[in-house]
Image (tube, rainbow, N blue to C red; front, side, top):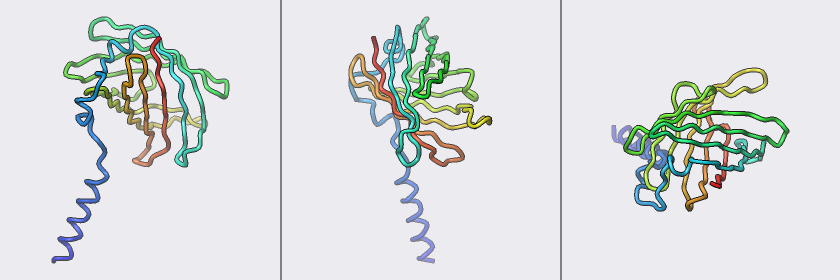
Length: 175
């Protein structure tokens, strides 16, 4: 009986150790991120996609035309990839108050959910990603950190069925 209790306690501790940070952890961090102010006008971004081993699979740039009308925003993203391909994604964001956002885009399954505290936004969504003639529904867990009034860093983990596929790292620069 003691052995079972010790195993259960150990498993609980192991699972708790796997839990990642919450956005609340960054509540006091400055400068404070206001998506409506940062993503207003034109924002440029540079990024890489790395596979599970950390190898760079694709490099890309993005030009984002952003505008807000009150609590409703549009982020029109124009991607250029290192292999010569291009892609466009138009996000429609709604500020829900209290640092919460909902986002929609044509290739996002359902809604993206975002929560902002301090200098940080956590953005979670499922993307319908074309891969070798098929469409995969891939989960994204984005963490964005405002470094200064013009620089925002983003690290996104991609997974499917709970298995980490790789990461996307982006650096945003507001014009």
